[in-house]
Image (cartoon, rainbow, N blue to C red; front, side, top):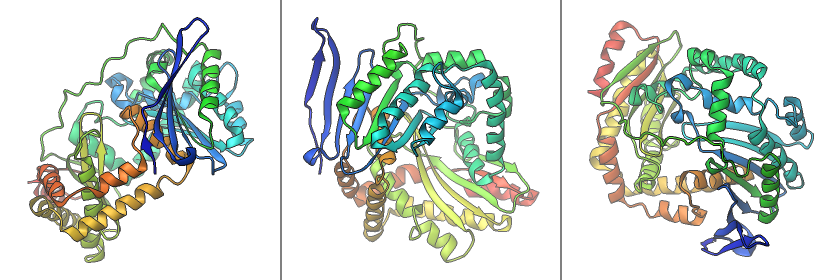
Length: 459
């Protein structure tokens, strides 16, 4: 069990100048699960969660930049930059970076999303200083050499091609475009062939300088870690690179939330010679800060979150119309999406869409019975805890929470909030979200008559 604690400590230099501010955000029993935050001069935040019983540690740096922060000509720059930070610094070559972590049996990777980017390394606790030094060096000292930009361009184009070869993945990008259009949130994280081919070394370097300022970064570490040691090592690494306090960073424009989700009832079909038709039927969802997100999470679990969910039972178990069918939510800073995915034979696509639409309409009108709510609460609670069983997941939780919410919630508080969801809250969020007219995205080999009937699913 953990509890919130507002205790703060501030360290000062010999001249009395404040140099750091430390807060205990969550206090665990006997130090286990304690989450602390230190804000260094210049605004860099360091958060840690301590678990002395494990022998591993995961260290990550989160950047408050994603594909939604790109202009149309820069689409894909965030992800391109993610690749380039692994290509070498003044101190290490690309081989040196990978070999340093491989030599201790660790793993290192990164990922780019719509609103953030994360770089991380998971190692034995004794090798945490090495992981800190390597990842901090990558983030603060990347060369972004012209030859690396040119070489990595081909790699990213192959990644785009790989995604396009997987229609079950590609259809979600199509759904984002269907709902959000040619806006930053509606464009693909990877960029397009045209934008990647057009990006120059200078454009990417300016993007790096603008967004990788300490005030836009969160450092997170979880596992058998000592908060004070992590802070000292991070500070030393950033000071070595002259990156702890920067005065040359360009101002970053606020994310534009004025663009609204497009008119409902839209249908986008991408013809492909595939064995299955891949469909996403969806509606506008909730922003990640919306208090109703807990009820929507329970609703999503009951509707399409597992083998006992309504959609799985109706589409797969009872009728055998699809192998994969599920629902999901995506929450952003100012909006969100709710979608139902299914992959089925082209001849079955209209039956699948009809069943999915009927279930959405039924739940929007009636809500859910108490037994389904109770089962969904149990499933969501269990998956939440089981999903936090390793230090990587814990690092993701505290890093993302600090970056996106500026606060931490204990697992106990999360479980309590899930358990507190009521049938009335489910009914209200179902009416508000699922009661909207949906839009539809489809990838597959549909014939003209089949394609013409797709509008039936959103009418």
